[in-house]
Image (cartoon, rainbow, N blue to C red; front, side, top):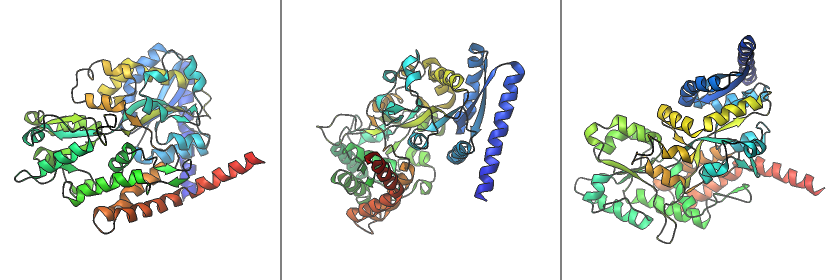
Length: 432
């Protein structure tokens, strides 16, 4: 059944390629196939006409792929020899596709480009595309996490601004929780890996050790972060619920069930749509607190988002690169933000409307100067899902934090077993 599915996917990819080629052949233009994921694959079509007007010799065909199916479809297309010319890849996927030889290194094209240069991007975001000192993707839009909070509730608790250290953060949460009729201070869904991972990064945990061969979650740095994190549930500052158990988090935020939420840029639009006009002054955003006063502020968050990558099998790499350069232009990035709500990767786009005057988006700009890549190993997404699974026992008080982290390291080591074998084999070959 799996073979049949792969064969059908490869056939579909080949048919799409043939259709694009025939379209290009009819009008004498060179066809470029672009795969966009989710809503981005839908709205990017609105940017194509201007590119084709400027580049009459190129025709871009956009195929929209659901996020839930994208990873498998991209792998199937690569194995079947019919990948897109250019594709949107989540930047945590870049290491995997680079490792299997699917992507074209872009260093020479970047060096010759008048549009794209590393210094025009947030450094931590750019680094997510660098594998073994070679660049395999161009940041398209960015993602990270900041603190959304009820400014009115913080003022009632005696705070004019968001906390800047973990100690201030904890103190603020305790005062919020002590208010008459208060429920909880912060929402930390138990099925999400991002929040605890961020706290670990802030404590300088490498997350993995030995060049990505083993888990390092039992290490002192991550353990300190996990102790602090689990303590928020133990002391009833955060409800022990998964995201799906919250119901309508926007409604619960508006009624004060919780006053803080570590979340991402898509919620700028969601808060504006889901909260009433009279509630818009109740909420604000802030960069994440740092571990202590001696640490640089803001505290580190992770570097996420999507990148543009050219597949090695593409016979139209130059035309695909021209489309990637176009999508990287600051004006086009600003237009894409207006269409999709995705934060631009280019720094210059933040100096133009609508972002330049958006006070609630400003926290993201500050935070993006302090982001770090997640471990650049193909197995990271599997590892990430294990973090909330193995920590749930500690959160619910069924075992201590040390035992949960030991279980997590054991799971991670099993996930990385093949990686260790491949690396050992490669080292043995070099030693001959």
